[in-house]
Length: 183
Image (cartoon, rainbow, N blue to C red; front, side):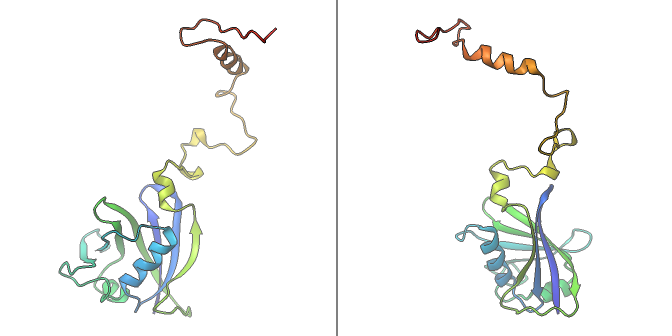
């Protein structure tokens, strides 16, 4: 049994990763693959919070047994059979950094090793770029979405250029600055 899962960031349309994962793949193996692909730090506590279709918690799986088992002993299929449709994968528990994982369904006729989840589709940079201020085009407000070469007459005026030139010739007090070499 092979499942398709989608990794997303809450509120960001410009990012996702789609994986094909064998049902026998442990959550730890899935964690290692996602961590490597998304360049998450290796020295952090991790946790998978499994959610059902209503958003209720089905289980919490970490490096230590939190009552439902550990990530290295728990196959993905077992958690899905327990009712999980989504996960919150905390890749840094201490700082509450996470991504969302949605189980999109079972794939027929697809072969995947339980030891190696397959990255099937990619969109956008890794999550660290969003933390550093990156904004994807589709996440911009409609009035700021402009393709190269498009202009918005309301936002740009020739007078804007003149103001910048005048400001360059003034110091902090607003007094004009003269350059002796300038004629």
